[in-house]
Image 1 (cartoon, rainbow, N blue to C red):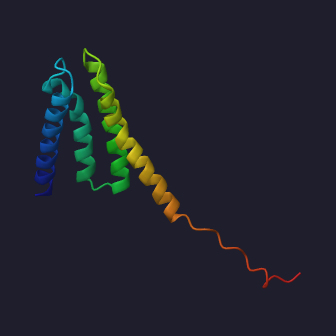
Image 2 (cartoon, rainbow, N blue to C red; image 1 turned 90 degrees about the vertical axis):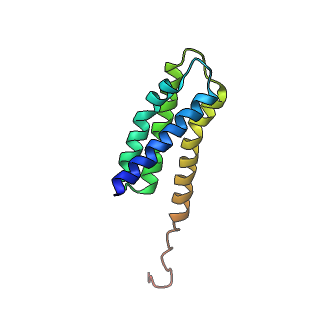
Image 3 (spheres, rainbow, N blue to C red; image 1 turned 135 degrees about the vertical axis):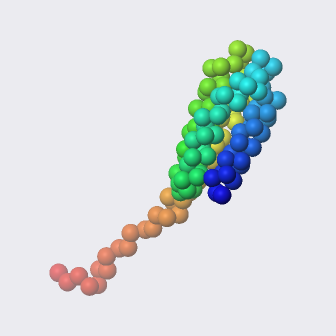
Length: 121
């Protein structure tokens, strides 16, 4: 039953994202072009979610394929996209980068100093 739930969830997210991006982009870029551009990213994300990839790895891959999808949209559209679309493409990468660095910083522990009293010259 899990594979049906995952399929329905990601198809719904794909449709919602296609309609939202269509509404926010120029009229030359229609919902069919947007849907085709983000479909591979949605399929990759769904497959990784279904395979239960660790959350951090999933976030890194999702941010990367989202940026690639934004690049494809920029190539496909006949009119230039707004600068806001560039921000939307980069924000997931920045968030993932911040999370990775904060987690690495929190996990790092200072190295214990050797006890000088126990060492005899």
